[in-house]
Length: 520
Image 1 (tube, rainbow, N blue to C red):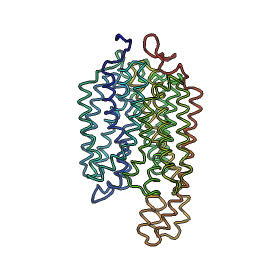
Image 2 (image 1 turned 120 degrees about the vertical axis):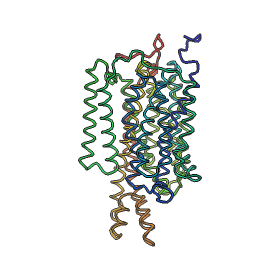
Image 3 (image 1 turned 45 degrees about the vertical axis):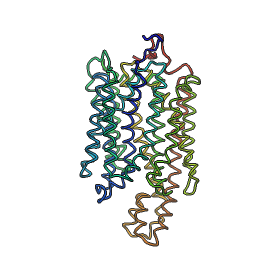
């Protein structure tokens, strides 16, 4: 033990900086591609990708990423978290290079899937390394900074993407990852110590396989249903099949003498409650972020770069409040801090139920700032509560559970809230389509982007179609925002009932480690 009694690594704050760099490259990539989709669809300046190919350029990454997060968390605990992080960074950098120079949409889709493998190795490793190098007394603050980096990446991705596309070709949005990855590999090799579970036991091959199959099937069903509708049998076969396999995973883990995940942890409130909060918050927040981009670019007419800049209040709030959340938790308790954060987030999401095409833009900026402030006071205490419910040697599993729930909930939020948005839009636009040519009717009825494209071919009738599309989209947005806000508000009940109070999550025991409250 060090003279001041702090059991953290002497270079822990420098290591945290390296983890933030490693994390940023993954989070940025999740958002930066969105602004390049129109360019990728251009046959001259891009790859001439179809609508379906554009969707899979995003979803191939998400599917692999969500499906392998838990597996890489387990592998990191066994094989070494530093080793898995380095492997993930190298894979991510090579796949980014392949994506930048892809010659066809199919090549881009496969390169993006390889990026997903790298990202799945990086994300849980960063959080589990932080959990291992920081003393429980500093860990809450460190996780707050880590969570702030997630929010920063979400917000600056569109800004960076817009800047690159204004000056360079589309591949630059992927090529920008390569020097960041190279820096990350160098710093990890120089600064980050190796850590692993000293008593890993036998590898749970069956559990790992069940988790991959279940998560991939569930995520695929969610994504496919959000894109093409939930009325098709293949969607429900995938979703229900995924749920069934995950149920089999839980049943197997309960009986296993060497489980990858001790499912008894979900009986521990300070593990189960924050997992639920993360899921509910990301379901609502990512659903709203999905349609707010269309609202800003189409209904309000902002460019991709301007749209990215409008998300900056969210990033500023994350940077300001996330690192301070640990201090707030010590003063008021995780229950109070997370409840206030949930209230602010629900209020921010509900604001989109009232904005329209003429609402002053400062109202939207305030909503983004409130959302960033709220999430900055939910994610750090929730993540710290999850990590403190596990001993340090099992940090990879805790990190993987937290990140997997976030990814699946985000995909589900985009799919479900996107479906509510699409259904509301189609119901509103139908009366305005009766007199249109069949091709324009089909395009305008599918989405607001299709309506804008069709309007450009209609001459004098175009503005009337644009006005109808805007009205239909805004009405559908109001309903979607209400659903998102209500789901997020449900987390308030969870926080009030099960989140720990002032003496809760992360309080160190005399040995310096958090108690496991009855879980093995």
